[in-house]
Length: 245
Image 1 (cartoon, helix red, strand yellow):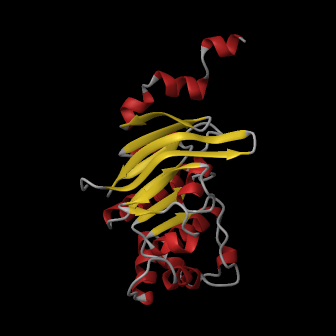
Image 2 (tube, helix red, strand yellow):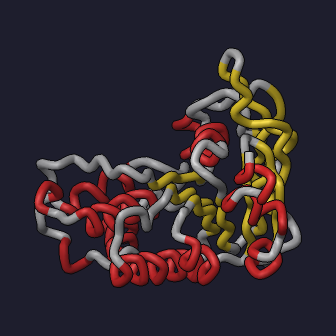
């Protein structure tokens, strides 16, 4: 890891009319790490990803990729700077093959020289789906589609991968395979920020965990410290006073 964080979020807030979905959130992600964002449903995890990737404009605050301000940039410009997102619900080009889907990612993404065949082959290998290269996307299982979604994001030659619940709905074997993919991606020099509800996976793969609750950052740190934090336990399980009420 280097001294300079790859991603900085500074006092980020987002209001939807009367609802405050994100409230004064600040944190940094170290280059070369796997950082997980966790929290109850409605905590603001998806809103955070939408703000980082330019799908939403913040009400206040800013997002930085190294020393480049991302806030206010369109999504394609953010992708050209080296940020990719793997969505929870995979939406491939169903009539194309797996390799053709991944090739689409390699044709776009990070600005600069690109070797499309090499980027496509690398992404298929890292995502563990090279054996599916010539299968039509419409024939894939849910687990295989999750791998395809990650592969398509990797093919953009991203420096930062935002993975939105890649293990959701997967069985234990599929979940273990996805964790291996994320580790291989990190080993190739890509920083990973992960939103995930599968806590055993989060504890296993994360270098650092950020905990959101009602749009606020309530805890951050190493997995063991976060798991023992009383604020985190209360957010997930509720306090005795809340249960009594």
